[in-house]
Length: 301
Picture (cartoon, rainbow, N blue to C red):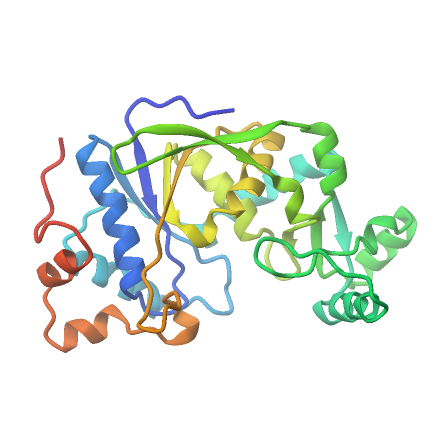
């Protein structure tokens, strides 16, 4: 169901697993700009479900970088690691609806199964991120066998049973997207192309897909502004929102900031961090203008 919009609520939701770069700055500034121009609220959320990679030092750096850019956000900041109970509750609802199943396959198992089929001349479909769709091996396990393997600690993840999910939520699935002028248009969603996506991971009681839809609903987020690299994920999020009875926000997926070679900026590529620019003498005002925003934050309308 579509969100009922009163006062718009925007959010910037980085993960503290590295230093912010220009791409993060653009997304944060764009969220803030939307909130100011349309009289909305601007929230900051720390997406730290990955307890092995997220660090307190990186979280502290996020606050410092955003404050340097001239941004202010509402307190308290929602930190996902403090709300695993919310994600467990959502997962329990999905279990109750019979749309998830345990998976005991490692990434190596999946890669080998797909490679074997492709070696035999059978092309294998990919999800929107380019990863091979899960072949459904564990979906066919007898319940008694699955229970024994769970008890033995063999489980690697819980997956969405896409076929069953689409029976319960047949669609058509859609959401509303908006542009920089807040003009809206409907957009078709195709969740089936994600296959049996991971919903809960072995070492974390959630996943990005599950936690983000739960958080957006609990925080009353009405407008999601994020990069085009997450546009395809919206298809899966719309399905989860419907299965969980959560509102669907409006979405804007902005262009990505790229390096001179045309690749998107990423922490994994060690893209130049904001702190490096700051230490080199670049001012926040200069950076804001470089990214297409006023040198100083505009007052809210």
